[in-house]
Image (cartoon, rainbow, N blue to C red; front, side, top):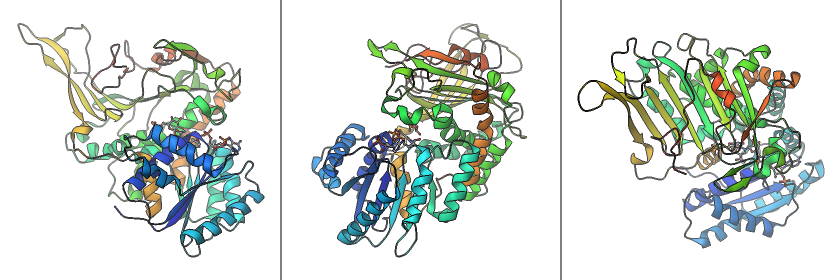
Amino acid sequence: MENSKNLIIVIFGASGDLAARKLMPALFSLKAQNIMPEKYAILGIGRTKITTEEFRKKMITSILSFSEEQISDRNLISDFAKDLYYLSMGDYSTEGFSDLKSFLKVTDGKYGIGGSYIFYLATPPSLFEPIAVNLSKAGLLDRKDGFRRVIVEKPFGYDLESARRLNRLLHKILAEEQIYRIDHYLGKETVQNLLVTRFANGIFEPLWNRNYIDRVEITSAESIGVEERGGYYENSGALRDMVQNHLLQVVGLTAMEPPSSLDANAIRNEVLKVFQSLQPIKEEDVPNQVIRGQYTGSLIRGECVTGYRFEKNVAKDSRTETYVAVKFFINNWRWGGVPFYVRTGKRLPTRVTEIVIHFKQTPHHLFQRVSGRFSSNQLIIRIQPDEGILLKFDMKEPGAGFNVKNVNMDFHYKDLANIRVPSAYERLLHDVMIGDSTLFSRDDEVETAWKFLDPIRRAWQNNPEIKVYGYPAGTWGPEHAKDLIEGEGLDWRYPCKNLADDEVYCEL
Ligand code: NDP
Ligand code: BG6
């Protein structure tokens, strides 16, 4: 793998959940694989007042808790920690940025870096603008000897207006190739594999349209709650946190036309066309096409779990959605009339992300089903965990007569090769270091995604009578989400941790 130039990575929001859970384990893993640059330093900036020593200890604990692999060599973590530094900055004022400038000057000299810096904005989105402006005012974005790159976390803005403003502002102070709008789902191997599944195989593509597909279902379920992130999540909710970015990108890759090449812009152009074809959801249709929910306190496997309104930094009368299910259509020749169902939620029974392609039933039901119900073929593309593909189809039960049973044919990604799959953040951080923006979102994609979702937020804001349904933590969300699915007796798939299982009996 290509090694990057020497550099300093500055993480704004380093005292937060993302830095602890994903960024530090990813950077450590790059170090463990010897693909960090020869000379580098990492500066964490956060509101919490802690010393560099305390920050190092905290990050060591995070790496031990959240790394995907067992770490046998503790010395390697201590070695990694010695290049971590911390600066406390509460209000991101000009004064704080002059401290940052001095830090960079001293550290650059001490390590012999040569002026290449990455600034990672991992704070709540309201701080992206002031941080970018102050970086520019401090002259830290001017390219002199090395490169200056800025990674912007999602959600990119709060709505179309703020996303446009942020894009305009960033374009004033940075060239587009210096901006990396990160959506870590695009860094997931299995999300990239969607392109291969669709476009490297001749068998799926002829069926991949309204003539053969009845509906498409995309689920991203999480078993964790909001935990320490109430401050961020209260202003975000599931729609902004997951749907506007990760899940619409998955929709884009599932629904797009074949790109002319693997060039970043060729793929982005096709995803953009899907976003542009999304049938707008009118404000008055929101109650029929969107269901929102919020988890309430419950007992999960004998343990008391608090409701969302009792989480830290959450208002006691909060109406922020921790669950959302949306039904929509894509108005183009391939997908006209095929409903897409997308749902995501926190404190659901398990952590699963998957795409379910439901094919149409046969035009004539010739055979009896043991269950008495006619099933249709399903292709399930599992993003995580137990990554793989499952095809459900009917077979004859051995014996007299023609009793038909639905069976599974599955492929598990882990059987493909005995190699380690890098985490999404590992892949994307390394891409920024070497200046490859293929897996990052483009300004027009982000804005078009907001344009589609804005009416939903507006309807919720303007019509407080649109219900926020409570659902007990550990369940599959509001019962009403079933009503979204068109067709008698149809329901969502209730996936388990194991790709092949669904419904009631799941491995814990
Ligand atoms: P957190 O709530 O954990 O906080 C992030 C950081 O922002 C912390 O350093 C926190 O400081 C600081 N902060 C919060 N509010 C303020 C404020 N009003 N003024 C100054 N500083 C503030 O959020 P996350 O780390 O979870 O998320 C950060 C970003 O990363 C978001 O944009 C999110 O969408 C994105 N993200 C998060 C993921 C995750 O798994 N957590 C995954 C993918 C993306 P302090 O804690 O010191 O008060
Ligand atoms: C982040 C959201 O973007 O994605 C989190 O802010 C969510 O709320 C996370 O937990 C999910 O990512 P993954 O990779 O665990 O599916």
